[in-house]
Image (spheres, rainbow, N blue to C red):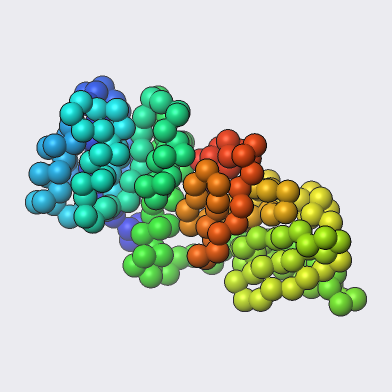
Length: 237
C-alpha cells in the first residue's frame, strides 16, 4: 500500500481527541495530515484551500454538527466518523461513510478503517491491487461440482427449495438449503442479513435501515440483523 498517500483532515471540538487521531495519522505510512480543526465552520473554509481525500469527523460539535457540515459540502471527501456516541451509526452510513469508529480509538480499529478508505481510493482511481485470496467452496450444480471463488460471490438468495448464487460473472441455481451454505461460508466475510439472503460484506456499497445495496441491486435487511451488520462491517480488516 506504499503507493497510496491520502491527504487528511481531523475535525473534533475536543483537543485531546484531535491529538489522539493526529498521532495515529502521523504513524501511518499511507496518511498525510493537512490540517486539524475544532469546528465545522473552519473546516468549510479550509476545504476551499486544500484538496482532501479523507476526513476524520466528529459528529456532535458546536454551531454545526458533522452531518450539517457534510450537507453543506458539494464535493465530499471520504469520511470516517469518530464519535463517542453509538446512536448515529445508521445515519452515518446514509452519508456513505467509510467507517464509524467509537471513541476511545484503538490503533487496530483506526488502521482497519483506514484500510477501507485506501481500498475505496484504489477502486475510484483504478489502482491495481494485489490479487485477492483464492478461497472457494464447491457447489453441486447439474450433477457436477462447481468451484465458486468467495471473492467473486456477491450474495446467495433462497428460492424455496433452491438457492441462487449471484457472482461477478454469472448466476446459477442449485438444489440446497441456505443453512448448508451459511455453515460453509466464513463468518468474517459473509453475513445472513435476511431469511432469504446471505451477502458478501466486501461487496456492500451502501445500506440503510431497510436495504443493502450491492452493484446497484437493493436487497432487504431484516430489522433484527441491523446491529449485526454494523458490527460485521466495522470488524472487516
